Image (tube, rainbow, N blue to C red; front, top):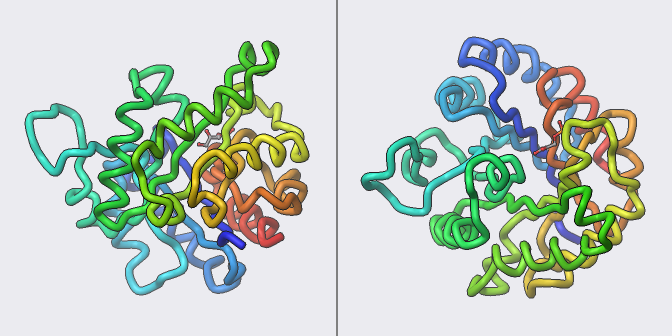
Length: 248
Ligand code: 13P
């Protein structure tokens, strides 16, 4: 069985001061969080140093980045490299999020470069895939997510793929309150799992309007190993309750 992971993607929310306030509160929940769920929080780059300082001395919550560049350093204005993230004890990086694909020109090719660089550095990519509402209505959901997953893992060994995390995030379910039916999400996620060798052992997360009220239904599905959570990860009490309910 792949391990369970719940990752909070804060997107462009919270200053360093707000991050400090979040952790001051959230850390009170940490001793009671279920052992079987790996918790990851991905704040903005500018809050990573504060988050790392807040998390010192505990090993239940890991830090993630919301993006990364595949080169170690160089003339890439506005980008952040793996060694820069490692300094702040970042272990995970989200790659290929639909917001980056839609608004910032993230391509399958660059997602693949990032996946290689992260796995070679011993970090865990959280590879996000998902279809638009038009693609779902045209009946091409499987083809879209399988193509995105195969492209992300091109020339990645099965041993390395098994160390990654994949997130299925139907774009129409993100931030809309229209979460995907858990049985349907599980069906798509079984296609994702079967599309690349090694992913049978990798956690596959659902993302898209996951809340404390629906997480149990997702956690009960055989192919759903946790969640990639946006809005519901911003409040410390709500996020802790969601993690508790994700134990399955
Ligand atoms: P919401 O949980 O706000 O729908 O966002 C999901 C998401 O995009 C996580 O990466």
